[in-house]
Length: 271
Image (cartoon, rainbow, N blue to C red; front, side):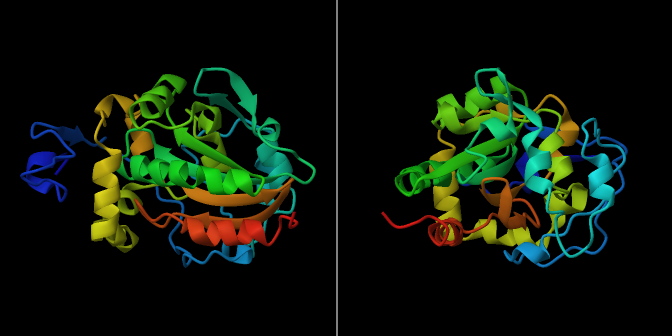
């Protein structure tokens, strides 16, 4: 079967709310890049469990980190990963190019970098909503909250305007450069069939999702439909030092923000 009809396969449809229009059908490409992760890691939030693998050859890598990545080991990211990520160019929601290293203080600044899936993903609207509600708490602790999604800046603006979400901490990575660099999971199975995605169907998560998607539109989905197979992740940096790394095992498998906040608090001096 080469397509999924939301009318017959939509677990979120109810008499009172519908996430997908009844006529929506997604046509998957006939071929997908080979899945680069045959032995998925456990969803541990310990840094040395965040494994860095050679990414799938069909994804573009046109920045200087490729040689460094080849030298990495299975025990974790290379120590230079923060510096390497700093040279990756993304875009503000307003369309201006910006480097990761310009997003927070690269000496001692604390930053939480949430790599969403794509801007048209309903689970990402849920996560963005949760991030927005938590932003004041992170701000008051001196922690910069950064959200990056897949798609062009105009797609990012759709989410920012309709959710709404603060544009000053929302960025677009249309070529998935940061995702490729950090070895985040990609593939059909990860996106649609992974057991980790089951947690999305809890009542609390569904309630948050429905609220977040009141003004949802499919127009936020990237024009490059292969991007819908990309998973996200959550990372915490102190300056260039990576303190925490967690890859989403499947769609909607987000890191608990309370855990992220507690990690940040152990690194920020009391005032």
